[in-house]
Image (cartoon, rainbow over all chains, first blue to last red; front, side):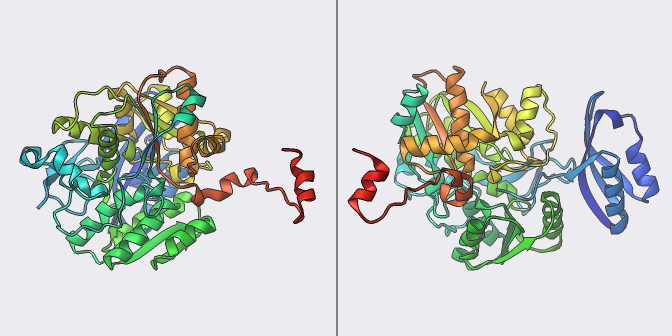
Length: 80
Length: 407
């Protein structure tokens, strides 16, 4: 089992979609929301994912292709 | 022993013991060092600081280290230059340049890395690492050399040659990563989870960031123990900006300076301005961006301290501005030609941003203003290549006169 901590940013047109539910169901991932802020225009969710490493990667690729931005929860690692 | 007692989550305020962690296990918020100021206060005075070393370590009690022996390559205590020529051009009578481009590896990163590597030694690590687009790479490699530690430096494959040389010379393992900015980020995050290394801006980040406070302390000391009316600061992760503000407040709380009304102004390049985008939108929400700017040292699309930088703007009644990309080189030239200080692209952002603040009346002519120059121009020479156009002559007076005319 592997885990990942990601921050998902949802554009306005995707806020109503049950994407986190689908991510967990279709990729067999346990999704655990730690922090979130969602309104009618934009939303972000800090999320822990647990599952097989390959499924985590596939799941994040799937949700990125849907138009959700997936970033490291601690901010960018690359610095100036 | 030092005065750091705990780490505290900036999101949920939970406290944990000091260790090599940067994120709260409960809410994933960033961790920050907590100090015992009451214990620190009796030994803290202007005299004690003045009698300290002429480096950033004169403020050691306010930094999160316990060891007597710090990893010091003489970072800090850099010049605060009264910039009368530039001030005249901008209509500012009390303008100062904090010239941090003269640090040992030519950027302010020496301040943060000195703390991070000192702490890494305390924690028992034998290897330090970082992912960098330039300044950080050189500083980590230099401090690792000084500490006798192994160093791994990850850089984008297309990084400018001068920056690769500036890190490689100190003998680290330099790894150039093929892929996009996001790919490099993802890999380095996985590496920091997989190896028992001190990754200066991930597991060492709470300590690393504290080094930036010394840029607040030093300016206040060099201004005669007072805070400026305005501070103009470049913004990447937002940590430098928030830590300068924190440093000024610590000095106030310890009675080293009096009450102040410093307005904090954050400057980003338009090609990577996630914090300013939120500021302009009146939103507390930082929407990550894909960096596309010549100011590579500010190219952080997902800034860890972005929301806290916004709060600092608000708390200080300051402002933020996204400098158009075409103004960055103009800022570099302006500073070089007026004051003889050659800065890198981040400094160009600061000077063009300063010019904007002066022109729009945000800064009044008689207000004490400090512009923070955080990196040296020799690192980003390619950015100003178009300005270089020497006249070529034959080795005769006639040839010289032909080209130059009568003078």
